[in-house]
Structure formats: C-alpha cells, structure tokens
Length: 74
Image (cartoon, rainbow, N blue to C red; front, side, top):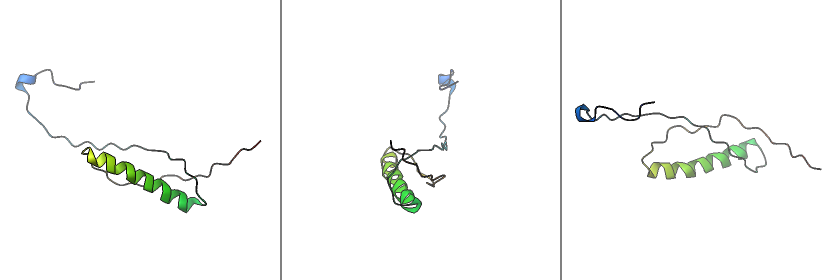
C-alpha cells in the first residue's frame, strides 16, 4: 500500500478529505433502552470534543443497536 509518492521532486500538494466511519461499543448501566441510548450518546459526545480538538470533523452520531445484557448469576 502506497503512503507516500516516489516522485517527491515532481509532486504537487493536494488536500484530500477522507470520511472514516467507525463503531464504538459502550456497556452502560441503565433502567431501560431509552436511558441506555442517552448515556451512550453522552459518552460519545465527550469523545467527539477530544477528536474535534485534534482537527477531526465529527459527523452524525447515531445508535445502531441496543440490546439488554442478561446477568448470569450463580
């Protein structure tokens, strides 16, 4: 995979915008799915501030799946 040109003396500069989508899984304690979504989105928003301070542009943040984790007690 090429990460740099081999012809640096002949090269021009280009600005390239790259959209990278990633998924982050949060495990939260909540009383229902609505509260779980609220908590997870708040946590994601905290991380977005850090990324924005590093010149990342944060797009849409959405919840893709919420499922309850059943406690297995002995």
